[in-house]
View (cartoon, each protein chain N blue to C red):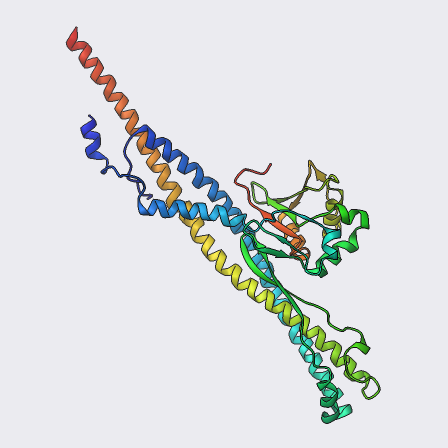
Length: 209
Length: 161
C-alpha cells in the first residue's frame, strides 16, 4: 500500500504534485528504456565474453603446441637467443566509450608487425615453426586485450543494471503510487469541501428565509 | 470545516522533506547521466579515417573513442563519396513500446548511406522513412555487436513515433 505524502491540502499543492507525477513518469520511461538497453548490452557482453574466453583458451593451446615444436626443432638456447632480439613495447590504444550512460573502457592493439620479416628475429637461422608461433602469439595478444575489455564492460554493466533496477523499482512501487494516492486524496478532500460548502449555503438560505 | 480538515491532514511543512529533495536530485541526476555520453558534434567517416586516434567529445566533456577496425569495416562497405557524407556516431533511439529502435539520420544525404550500412550489417533490406530507419530489437543487438563504437543510444522522455 503506497504511503500518503504529507502535504497541505491546497490547490497549489495539488498542482505541484501533478507536476511531480509528470516528471516521475517521464523519468520512469527513460529509466525503463535504459534498463532494457543495459540488459540487452549485458547479455550481449556476457555471450561475447564467454566466446572470447573460449577463443583465448584455444589460441593458447595452439600457441603452446607451436612453441613446443619450435623449441624442439631449434633447441631452447637458440630460441631464447632469437626471441630476446624480438622484445618490443606493446602499443595499445586505450580510451573509453559510453553505453547508455555507462563509461566503459575501449582497448585496441595497435601496430603489430604482422609481416614475417618485420618481427625482429633472423629468418636465416629460424624455421617456419617459429613464424607460426609468432603469428599465434600476436593472435593471443589480440584475444587477451579483447577479453580484458569485455570483462571490464561486463562488470560495469552489471553494477549499473543493479543501480538502475533499484531506481526503476522505487519509481514504480513507491514514488509514482504515492503521488497518485496523494493526488486522489486531495481531489476527494476538495470534493468533500465543495459538498460541505453547498450544504452550509442551503442551511444559511433556510435560516435567512 | 477548515479546522476539521486541518486536524485530519498532517502538519504543514515548509519546503520539501529531505527524502523528497533526495528523490528530486536523483531524478535530475538520472536525466543528466543518460544523455551525458552523447557527442557534442558528429564527425565524417572520411575525417575519422585520417585521424591517428579517432574520437569525438561527449556532452560531459569525456571522449568517445572509435575503433579503427570498425571504421575500416564501415569504409569497406561504402565508396569515398559516401564516406564524406556519413556522420558518426550514428544515433539510436528506443521506440515507445521498447520493441523497436529508430536510427536517426542527421546527414544531408537523406539517409541513403546509413540505409546501405545498416542493410549490409544486418544482411537484410531496411528503408529510411522521414530521416529514420526502424529496426526491431533482435536486429538492434546484431547491429550493436558489429558497430559497437560507431553507434550511441539517445534517450528521450518524449514518445518516439
